[in-house]
Length: 291
Image (cartoon, rainbow, N blue to C red):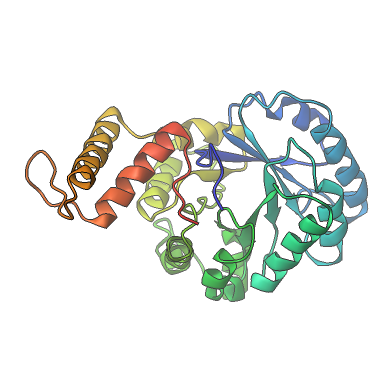
C-alpha cells in the first residue's frame, strides 16, 4: 500500500506518556515520528497515555511534512488503541507491536474499516521468530505499508547474541527485505540501534542496514538523526546515475524496445531500474511500492 512521501530517512520513537517530549518531538528534525504506547509506557499508564496521544493528534498541530505513526500495544490493549486512534486525519498509520501473523494484521485492518477509517496505514513490527518466518504473509496483509524489524525482542526470542558486525542478524533482516519485495510494498524500515554516543559505530551499522536493503531507520534518540539522514540521503552522483537509468528506460519504452542500454552501452535489467527508482524515491520522498 503506497503513500505520497512514503520514504522517510528516519522514524524517531517518542514516549506517549511524556507531554514535554511530545511537545518538542516535531522540532527534532525527524522525517517521521513513532509515538509509543507500548514499551515506553508502564502498564498503569496505558489508558492515560492513549488519551494524551489522541488529544495531541487532534490538536491541529503543524507536522511540517513529517509522518506521524503510533505504536499500539499487543494483546487485549490492541483493540481499544486502534478504535481510539481510528479516523484521526493527522495520523499516518499504526505500528503494530509484536505483530505475530497475517491474521493479526487483518484484524487491525478490519477494526479500522469498521470505524469508518479508510486511510490509516499499518506497519507491522516483527519481533519474534514466528513473525520472521511468516514475514511474506504479513507483508501481503491488508493496509500494510512497510515492515519493521524489532531486533531487541527478536534476539531474546531466538537466543541470538549479535557481535559488532551484526552478522547473526543478516538472515532475519534478509527475510524481511525479501518479503517486502515479494509483496510489492516499499522496503522495510531499518531496526533501531542502541548506539547513541558512538557516531562511528552507528555510521557503520547504518551503512550496513542500507546495503542490506532497508530504506530509512528507526531511532531512539535525536542524536542519531544526523547520521541516519546522512547515510540514507543519496549523493548527487547517485541521483544523477539513477536519473540517467530511468531516462534510458523511458527512451527504450517510447521506441517500443525491450532492450535498455545506458549511455555507455551497458544493458540495464529490471533490477537496476528498480534500484534507480528507489534512489530517487529516497531523495524525493516518493513511494516506490507496486502494491
